[in-house]
Image 1: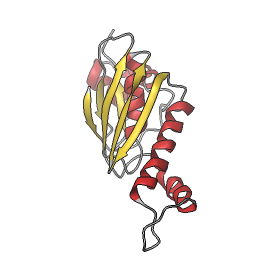
Image 2: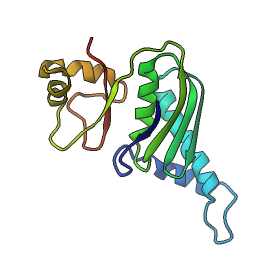
Image 3: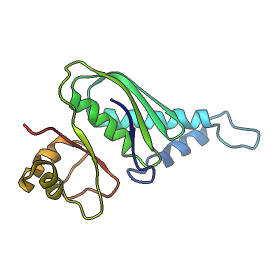
Image 4: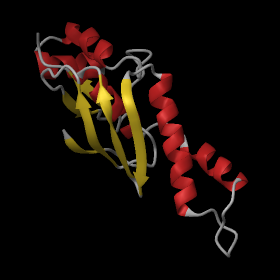
Length: 165
């Protein structure tokens, strides 16, 4: 799929924990600061744990950080899983892009991605994409397990919009 852009300042705040963990470990710069490489490895571990915690099936999952870009590889069991991994990684504060290098064992049509705007609801988004506001459960289901409640979306969040059946 390629490179996906995200709002760097929107999403889950996870990297503070990575910075705390990195401070506990060596090496540090002569000024006593944590090295960028160590910090990026800690952040990558956190991102992997997010994907694994969501139960997304990716064989050989590899996550690497280069600045604000996450590079992800591995083999997803479905196109939906691949897209959910991209969104789970991109909807983290501090991530501005996800470089998708994953493969899919069972290719299927790609979903569209949509950035939530102020005032959006899943019903409003469903009306825009499907012509029927009552199809919001399709979008909600397509974004599980990242979404836990159809009423809890926020501006800047990126959602999967599956093709119409």
